Each structure stands twice: as structure tokens, then as C-alpha cells.
Length: 330
Image 1 (cartoon, one colour):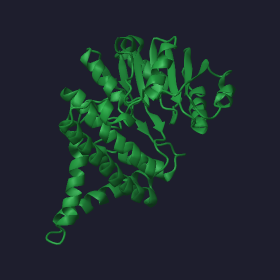
Image 2 (cartoon, rainbow, N blue to C red):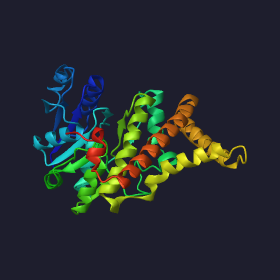
Image 3 (cartoon, rainbow, N blue to C red):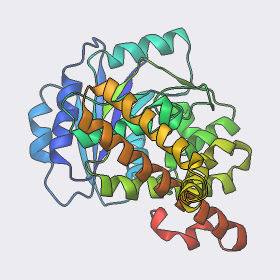
Image 4 (cartoon, rainbow, N blue to C red):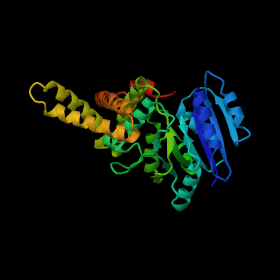
């Protein structure tokens, strides 16, 4: 099995350097290649790539901007491997990652896998807080952090493996963004390809660097999830409505607080649970309070836009591409 590592990048010089540096430190002894797909960056990334040309079997390709999904497809079409490992440029890859994946695929081969993410010690307090609310069982049930207890795990493109056979059968990622990764997984399932979670194939994922960008990101997540529910109703789950229900419950608790304090008290207890869980994990009071703030940003951003998009799709005869052009690359 020959791995081709595919990483699309748009600017992000510092993060790309950290990514390549982590790959260069791998303990994996077998040959592999790395393809950096420059998606029309406005800055020169060749100086970032150059120091690693002697350390890695590395190809740097610059192309016109067409989005991360199409850039991954471009990389896979130009790769020589029979199994593609796809990462975001803001990831740091542990040195034993490739060995872990190789062993897992030899023991139980699948055409697509995903792994969880975590926060590195070098990450900022905000990044750690965001990582916590995106992955902790107390906030998302762990479904984004490497758990299959609530719903079947859907590999994500920040840490995903895909066989050449699966890529050729599906033509890779679609134009929707975000949401191109679960959309691809749904098509794989419909074609009969098997996927799995490799719990030990963990990467450190920086996610968004501030809460404003995080709000924009989760708002788009909510909107694209509603679109995916319309396209693939067989894979829609009641759990996707939980953020919207959280928003409704929070508003209800505030509105009736003069009549009864029980609902808002329960909300306080839950917020306290999130606070304490984050403090225990990171041993930081600041990260604990940031996690609570990030929780409400995530729930309201996702929940409101999920509901709004669902209603628009329900009552409109237009296609999602016409209604939400900003969620699709041309």
C-alpha cells in the first residue's frame, strides 16, 4: 500500500510549515508522497515548501482557486498512490500516525476511514476551548471527536483516508462547502463502500483562531447539514436537530424566568457541567469560561441556520445551489 498525502492550502504559510514539519518527523519507514495543492493563494508558498523538498517526496502544485474539495480531487488525480490520506493544512500529524493507519488497514481494510482530532499544547486558549466544544461528549456527544455511540461515524476531510478505487467510483468531493466530506461519505455508503473510525489515528487540529470565525463556520455547518438532509433523507438523524432545540429551550427559559426559574436553572447546571469539564481537561479557568461561550456560539450559530435553511428548502422550489450560492464553489 502506497500512501499519497493530499493537503489543499490557501495562504496559511505558518500552518503549512507546521504541517510539513510534523510529516517530516514521521516514524513511518515505508515510502510515501506528499502533494501540496496551492488553491490560488495570494501569497507565495514556495518558500515554505522548499526546505522540505529534500526531506520528503514532495510535490507542490499551484492552481486557480476552486475550493478545498476540488483541490483535493486535483491532488488525488495527480497522485501516484493507491490510498490517499487527506488533511487540512491547519493540522499537526503525530509521528506514529502513518504507522497506526497502515496497521489498521492491514488488519481490517476499508475504502474510507476517518480519525478524531485533539488540541495540541501549543494551541491558544480560544483554540482549545473551540476544540473542546466540538469534540467533548458533554457538548456534541463525541460524534465529532471520535465516537460512534450516537450515530455512525462520518469521516471528515481534515483527517480522512480514501482508496483510489473509491475516488474513481465517486469522482471525489462535490462543490458544496462546507459539508463536502459527509456528502462524499453518503455517496460511498450508497455505492456499498465500507468506512470506519480509527480511534488512534488522531491529529491535532487548530480549527478557527477566533470566536467570530468559529461562529461563521458553525453557521455554515448548520446550513449545509440542512441541504444534506434534503439530498440524502435516508441519512438524516434526529440528533441533527439538537442545536435548534437547544436554542428554543434557551429562549423559552429566559422568557418564562419570571414565572418559573426551573428551566433556566437546568440550563445553568448544564453550562456549569461544560465549564467544569473543560477546566478539568485543560486545568484552566479561562479555557473553561471560553468553552461555555464557544458552546453557545456553536449551538446558536448551527441551530438557527439549520432551522432557517430547512424551512427555506421546504417552501422553495429552487435548488440549493440557487438559494445558497455562497455555499457552493463554481
